[in-house]
Length: 617
Image (cartoon, rainbow, N blue to C red):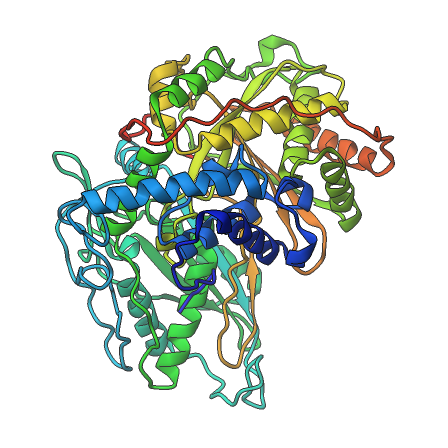
């Protein structure tokens, strides 16, 4: 089944070998020759992105046998600095393991590994064709912070659809010669029974999918209690557009988190033998990373069912193990001083008033309950390969990431569109540095708040602005293990009904893998869908094309909360500023970022995660 990252045997380097290990992993992730890299060059200057940093930490974790938080790399960009920190982290991890009475996993009571916990493995040994194996049940588990936030929001507003994650594919008619896209002989037909059995296999494999989520005395997950979904067949429809609309309408029906299942699948036929296939998963059990994992697992399970063979499957860690590892990471990565520093940086962050730059303040709409009709409005714009090359060129010149430049562009564009020069921006973080989560469907995404300081409102992008944004983003990412809900509690920002605290807008560089569905004898084309609801009032994304070299800029907003001219003005300014980078007169020696604060020494005091109170992203 899915394997989105390579793993190797656990190693315990000698003190002098940590640098060699880090340099080797840098080279592997970046596709560079190890001999060309030196330990004193920052990762961003080598061309590394935030997603690359996540991969570095995941591969280091696989080699060292314990979690390596991405936040630890934020202010340790060179191989030398990262290696020095890893030595201390390794030493503390070994001490914790020895103190845990010889426990190999170091998990708390009631937890277990995929080998020892029968609830964790799902369909570990593979299931022969026939009825899908029912997932085993396990005791109630206290929810991790993000799933907890999604549960509370859904229970508070059952009509809310902002946490519904949709995926649709157009499936071409099967080839006449009975060969699939890999050239293998197949029986060219759609087998609904086999597909439903494959759904059951995937459902049993991933505890996040087969759990129900309830508010008992505390918010809990109950693995193995949710029934597997079965495909809702909508019949043949006259056009592809009609089929897509019918599938979307079916997937918009309510998901019951307390009884399950937390996902649904629908299919409609179109002329010529094709189909539109769609699925929806509640965000409580899903995130952007999960898209590719779920599509790949479903593809492999369906093929195995068609071929009447056992599914070659490896056991996955269960929710207990994954969430326990996450708590340990937060305890290791966060101290009270870091929480206090981050809270001080965000104190007084102003809310966006949502007046357009050309409009008087009296046009500012009153807040309303989110997701009331009409739904979110979406507009898309194309960034060319040359546009991205210009962004990357500026990033290379200043020694920052692509994301930092794009966030700076976004900040300047939003300032131009609204006339507001200071605000907080929500930025999603993958939360997948732990090898336990890399091949799992689940909700591991977190959100950091980047405070963009006062700036001119003319839409320009001076070097100082880029570097200031890069510094603000680095500070936020360095504290990504500080629970956002804890920050909200400490900062105690101004709250308004229907508005998220600290930030009312999100900017995301969506560079996770695309969900590729491989069906024998057919070609499936993924169709990125508009969101059925938004967690904030304005959500802007840049999604690179894997095959075309450019990217799509998407601006989504809640009508009635955001003036209609603001998203259009934002997109226009964003495209203009990116276009201006093509001929940017860059200084040969751009100003350097100020030295970051020294990271706290290990061991660290503990900050316990608390149920989030912020509107989740």
